[in-house]
Image (cartoon, rainbow, N blue to C red; front, side, top):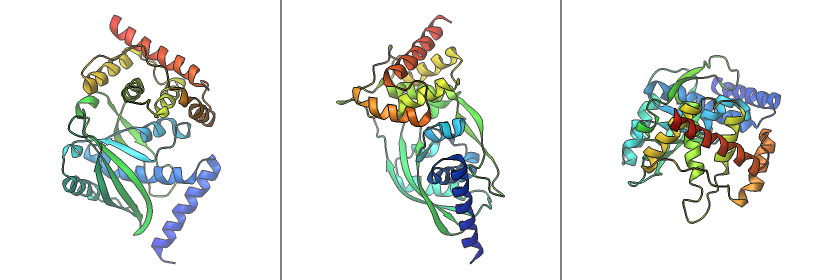
Length: 287
Protein backbone atom coordinates (compact mmCIF):
# COMPACT_ATOMS: atom_id res chain seq x y z
CA UNK A 1 0.00 0.00 0.00
CA UNK A 2 1.37 3.42 -0.95
CA UNK A 3 1.71 6.23 1.58
CA UNK A 4 -1.12 8.12 -0.13
CA UNK A 5 -3.48 5.13 0.01
CA UNK A 6 -2.60 4.55 3.65
CA UNK A 7 -3.43 8.14 4.56
CA UNK A 8 -6.67 7.99 2.59
CA UNK A 9 -7.69 4.85 4.49
CA UNK A 10 -6.60 6.35 7.83
CA UNK A 11 -8.76 9.44 7.30
CA UNK A 12 -11.73 7.29 6.33
CA UNK A 13 -11.31 5.06 9.39
CA UNK A 14 -11.07 8.05 11.74
CA UNK A 15 -14.18 9.62 10.22
CA UNK A 16 -16.21 6.42 10.57
CA UNK A 17 -15.06 5.92 14.16
CA UNK A 18 -15.89 9.50 15.12
CA UNK A 19 -19.30 9.24 13.43
CA UNK A 20 -20.08 6.05 15.33
CA UNK A 21 -19.00 7.55 18.66
CA UNK A 22 -21.12 10.69 18.15
CA UNK A 23 -24.10 9.01 16.52
CA UNK A 24 -23.90 11.16 13.38
CA UNK A 25 -23.69 10.46 9.66
CA UNK A 26 -20.11 9.83 8.53
CA UNK A 27 -20.80 11.78 5.33
CA UNK A 28 -21.58 14.83 7.45
CA UNK A 29 -18.16 14.67 9.10
CA UNK A 30 -16.51 14.00 5.77
CA UNK A 31 -18.02 17.15 4.25
CA UNK A 32 -17.21 19.16 7.37
CA UNK A 33 -13.57 18.10 7.10
CA UNK A 34 -13.45 19.27 3.48
CA UNK A 35 -15.09 22.58 4.44
CA UNK A 36 -12.53 23.12 7.20
CA UNK A 37 -9.65 22.40 4.84
CA UNK A 38 -11.13 24.75 2.24
CA UNK A 39 -11.34 27.49 4.86
CA UNK A 40 -7.69 26.94 5.79
CA UNK A 41 -6.97 28.22 2.29
CA UNK A 42 -9.78 30.75 1.80
CA UNK A 43 -9.90 32.35 5.25
CA UNK A 44 -6.60 34.22 4.82
CA UNK A 45 -7.94 35.63 1.53
CA UNK A 46 -10.58 37.60 3.43
CA UNK A 47 -13.68 35.63 2.47
CA UNK A 48 -16.42 35.75 5.12
CA UNK A 49 -18.19 32.57 6.21
CA UNK A 50 -21.99 32.54 6.50
CA UNK A 51 -24.89 30.14 6.04
CA UNK A 52 -25.56 26.61 7.23
CA UNK A 53 -21.99 25.53 7.89
CA UNK A 54 -21.49 28.64 10.02
CA UNK A 55 -24.43 27.47 12.14
CA UNK A 56 -23.01 23.95 12.27
CA UNK A 57 -19.79 25.32 13.74
CA UNK A 58 -21.68 27.35 16.34
CA UNK A 59 -24.04 24.57 17.41
CA UNK A 60 -22.05 21.44 16.48
CA UNK A 61 -24.33 18.46 15.87
CA UNK A 62 -27.33 20.40 17.26
CA UNK A 63 -27.67 22.14 13.87
CA UNK A 64 -28.99 20.81 10.59
CA UNK A 65 -26.43 19.11 8.38
CA UNK A 66 -25.51 21.22 5.37
CA UNK A 67 -24.17 20.08 2.01
CA UNK A 68 -22.58 23.34 0.88
CA UNK A 69 -20.59 26.26 2.25
CA UNK A 70 -21.40 29.96 1.79
CA UNK A 71 -18.71 32.64 1.53
CA UNK A 72 -18.96 36.40 0.98
CA UNK A 73 -16.23 38.09 -1.03
CA UNK A 74 -15.30 40.35 -3.91
CA UNK A 75 -14.47 37.30 -5.98
CA UNK A 76 -18.23 36.89 -6.58
CA UNK A 77 -18.60 40.27 -8.29
CA UNK A 78 -17.34 39.15 -11.69
CA UNK A 79 -19.93 38.21 -14.30
CA UNK A 80 -17.58 35.95 -16.24
CA UNK A 81 -17.52 32.26 -15.34
CA UNK A 82 -13.98 31.67 -16.59
CA UNK A 83 -12.66 34.62 -14.58
CA UNK A 84 -14.42 33.39 -11.46
CA UNK A 85 -13.02 29.87 -11.81
CA UNK A 86 -9.49 31.15 -12.44
CA UNK A 87 -9.64 33.53 -9.46
CA UNK A 88 -11.04 30.81 -7.20
CA UNK A 89 -8.40 28.34 -8.35
CA UNK A 90 -5.71 30.88 -7.54
CA UNK A 91 -7.05 31.42 -4.02
CA UNK A 92 -7.07 27.68 -3.36
CA UNK A 93 -3.45 27.36 -4.43
CA UNK A 94 -2.12 30.18 -2.25
CA UNK A 95 0.02 29.33 0.76
CA UNK A 96 1.83 26.15 1.66
CA UNK A 97 -0.56 23.89 3.54
CA UNK A 98 0.80 20.39 3.92
CA UNK A 99 -2.37 18.51 4.81
CA UNK A 100 -2.50 16.20 1.80
CA UNK A 101 -5.53 17.94 0.32
CA UNK A 102 -5.83 19.59 -3.08
CA UNK A 103 -8.87 21.00 -4.85
CA UNK A 104 -10.17 21.24 -8.40
CA UNK A 105 -12.65 23.96 -9.34
CA UNK A 106 -15.44 22.71 -11.58
CA UNK A 107 -18.64 24.17 -13.01
CA UNK A 108 -19.74 27.62 -11.83
CA UNK A 109 -23.38 28.73 -12.15
CA UNK A 110 -24.61 32.30 -11.66
CA UNK A 111 -27.39 32.17 -9.05
CA UNK A 112 -28.50 35.79 -9.00
CA UNK A 113 -28.77 38.06 -12.00
CA UNK A 114 -28.62 41.79 -12.57
CA UNK A 115 -31.83 42.57 -10.65
CA UNK A 116 -30.71 40.80 -7.47
CA UNK A 117 -29.34 42.82 -4.52
CA UNK A 118 -26.15 40.75 -4.48
CA UNK A 119 -24.54 38.60 -7.13
CA UNK A 120 -23.86 34.97 -6.27
CA UNK A 121 -22.24 31.92 -7.85
CA UNK A 122 -22.48 28.21 -7.05
CA UNK A 123 -19.22 26.40 -7.73
CA UNK A 124 -18.58 22.66 -7.83
CA UNK A 125 -15.36 21.73 -6.04
CA UNK A 126 -13.69 18.32 -6.07
CA UNK A 127 -11.45 17.56 -3.08
CA UNK A 128 -8.51 15.17 -3.39
CA UNK A 129 -6.50 13.55 -0.62
CA UNK A 130 -2.99 12.54 -1.68
CA UNK A 131 -4.15 12.76 -5.29
CA UNK A 132 -7.16 10.45 -4.89
CA UNK A 133 -10.73 11.74 -5.06
CA UNK A 134 -12.08 12.33 -1.55
CA UNK A 135 -15.33 14.32 -1.73
CA UNK A 136 -17.40 16.61 -3.96
CA UNK A 137 -18.88 19.76 -2.42
CA UNK A 138 -20.56 22.97 -3.52
CA UNK A 139 -19.32 26.43 -2.60
CA UNK A 140 -21.64 29.45 -2.87
CA UNK A 141 -19.72 32.69 -3.43
CA UNK A 142 -21.79 35.79 -2.65
CA UNK A 143 -21.16 39.49 -3.22
CA UNK A 144 -23.03 40.84 -0.16
CA UNK A 145 -20.11 43.05 0.85
CA UNK A 146 -22.09 46.05 2.11
CA UNK A 147 -24.64 43.97 3.99
CA UNK A 148 -22.14 42.15 6.20
CA UNK A 149 -19.95 45.19 6.89
CA UNK A 150 -19.82 45.69 10.67
CA UNK A 151 -21.50 42.33 11.29
CA UNK A 152 -18.63 39.85 11.40
CA UNK A 153 -16.48 38.22 14.06
CA UNK A 154 -13.51 35.90 14.26
CA UNK A 155 -14.48 32.23 14.41
CA UNK A 156 -12.18 29.36 15.31
CA UNK A 157 -13.07 26.14 13.50
CA UNK A 158 -11.42 22.96 14.78
CA UNK A 159 -11.04 19.92 12.58
CA UNK A 160 -14.28 17.92 12.95
CA UNK A 161 -12.23 14.74 13.36
CA UNK A 162 -9.05 14.34 15.43
CA UNK A 163 -6.34 13.87 12.80
CA UNK A 164 -2.66 14.62 13.51
CA UNK A 165 -1.45 17.74 11.73
CA UNK A 166 -4.87 19.29 11.11
CA UNK A 167 -4.91 22.47 13.19
CA UNK A 168 -7.89 24.73 13.97
CA UNK A 169 -8.66 27.38 11.36
CA UNK A 170 -9.56 30.99 12.20
CA UNK A 171 -11.82 32.80 9.74
CA UNK A 172 -14.02 35.86 9.58
CA UNK A 173 -17.70 34.91 9.87
CA UNK A 174 -21.02 36.73 10.06
CA UNK A 175 -22.03 37.24 13.68
CA UNK A 176 -25.07 35.50 15.09
CA UNK A 177 -27.30 38.59 14.75
CA UNK A 178 -26.53 39.01 11.08
CA UNK A 179 -27.16 35.29 10.62
CA UNK A 180 -30.53 35.57 12.34
CA UNK A 181 -31.46 38.72 10.41
CA UNK A 182 -30.86 36.92 7.12
CA UNK A 183 -33.04 34.05 8.31
CA UNK A 184 -35.82 36.43 9.39
CA UNK A 185 -35.69 38.12 5.98
CA UNK A 186 -35.86 34.79 4.13
CA UNK A 187 -38.76 33.66 6.33
CA UNK A 188 -40.65 36.94 5.88
CA UNK A 189 -40.70 36.36 2.11
CA UNK A 190 -42.34 32.93 2.18
CA UNK A 191 -45.36 34.30 0.28
CA UNK A 192 -43.38 36.67 -1.97
CA UNK A 193 -43.77 34.46 -5.06
CA UNK A 194 -46.67 32.73 -6.79
CA UNK A 195 -46.55 29.88 -4.31
CA UNK A 196 -45.36 29.59 -0.68
CA UNK A 197 -41.68 28.97 -0.07
CA UNK A 198 -40.52 25.45 0.75
CA UNK A 199 -37.68 26.76 2.93
CA UNK A 200 -38.92 25.34 6.22
CA UNK A 201 -35.26 25.26 7.26
CA UNK A 202 -35.35 29.03 7.88
CA UNK A 203 -37.94 28.53 10.61
CA UNK A 204 -35.95 25.59 12.00
CA UNK A 205 -32.72 27.59 12.14
CA UNK A 206 -34.37 30.54 13.87
CA UNK A 207 -35.78 28.25 16.54
CA UNK A 208 -32.33 26.69 16.97
CA UNK A 209 -30.71 30.09 17.49
CA UNK A 210 -33.37 31.24 19.94
CA UNK A 211 -33.49 28.03 21.98
CA UNK A 212 -29.69 28.01 22.17
CA UNK A 213 -29.85 31.42 23.88
CA UNK A 214 -27.77 33.14 21.20
CA UNK A 215 -30.12 36.07 20.46
CA UNK A 216 -30.08 37.91 23.78
CA UNK A 217 -29.37 41.44 22.49
CA UNK A 218 -32.68 42.66 21.10
CA UNK A 219 -31.33 46.05 20.06
CA UNK A 220 -28.52 44.49 18.04
CA UNK A 221 -30.91 42.01 16.43
CA UNK A 222 -33.32 44.79 15.47
CA UNK A 223 -30.47 46.78 13.94
CA UNK A 224 -29.35 43.89 11.74
CA UNK A 225 -32.93 43.02 10.71
CA UNK A 226 -33.40 46.59 9.50
CA UNK A 227 -30.09 46.71 7.67
CA UNK A 228 -30.71 43.42 5.86
CA UNK A 229 -34.20 44.52 4.83
CA UNK A 230 -32.93 47.87 3.57
CA UNK A 231 -30.04 46.28 1.65
CA UNK A 232 -32.19 43.62 0.01
CA UNK A 233 -35.58 45.29 -0.40
CA UNK A 234 -34.88 49.01 -0.07
CA UNK A 235 -37.56 49.25 2.62
CA UNK A 236 -38.09 48.65 6.37
CA UNK A 237 -38.91 45.12 7.55
CA UNK A 238 -42.54 44.11 7.71
CA UNK A 239 -44.20 43.06 10.96
CA UNK A 240 -45.73 40.81 12.13
CA UNK A 241 -44.13 37.85 10.42
CA UNK A 242 -46.45 35.82 8.18
CA UNK A 243 -47.79 32.50 9.40
CA UNK A 244 -45.96 29.43 8.06
CA UNK A 245 -47.57 27.51 5.16
CA UNK A 246 -49.69 24.55 6.13
CA UNK A 247 -47.48 22.11 4.24
CA UNK A 248 -44.59 22.90 6.60
CA UNK A 249 -46.27 21.00 9.45
CA UNK A 250 -44.81 17.57 8.79
CA UNK A 251 -41.30 18.53 7.64
CA UNK A 252 -40.92 20.94 10.55
CA UNK A 253 -42.04 18.28 13.03
CA UNK A 254 -39.47 15.87 11.58
CA UNK A 255 -36.68 18.44 11.96
CA UNK A 256 -37.84 19.30 15.48
CA UNK A 257 -37.79 15.66 16.56
CA UNK A 258 -34.38 15.05 15.01
CA UNK A 259 -32.88 18.19 16.58
CA UNK A 260 -34.74 17.83 19.91
CA UNK A 261 -36.34 21.27 19.67
CA UNK A 262 -38.65 22.39 22.48
CA UNK A 263 -40.89 24.12 19.93
CA UNK A 264 -41.96 20.83 18.38
CA UNK A 265 -44.72 22.07 16.07
CA UNK A 266 -45.06 24.95 13.62
CA UNK A 267 -47.53 26.90 15.76
CA UNK A 268 -45.15 26.87 18.74
CA UNK A 269 -42.22 27.69 16.48
CA UNK A 270 -44.08 30.61 14.92
CA UNK A 271 -45.11 32.02 18.31
CA UNK A 272 -41.49 31.90 19.49
CA UNK A 273 -39.93 33.36 16.36
CA UNK A 274 -42.58 36.04 15.81
CA UNK A 275 -42.27 37.22 19.42
CA UNK A 276 -38.49 37.60 19.18
CA UNK A 277 -38.81 39.42 15.84
CA UNK A 278 -41.45 41.84 17.14
CA UNK A 279 -39.55 42.52 20.36
CA UNK A 280 -36.33 43.23 18.47
CA UNK A 281 -38.01 45.77 16.21
CA UNK A 282 -39.83 47.41 19.11
CA UNK A 283 -36.67 47.69 21.19
CA UNK A 284 -34.79 49.12 18.25
CA UNK A 285 -37.52 51.69 17.64
CA UNK A 286 -37.76 52.88 21.24
CA UNK A 287 -34.07 52.81 22.17
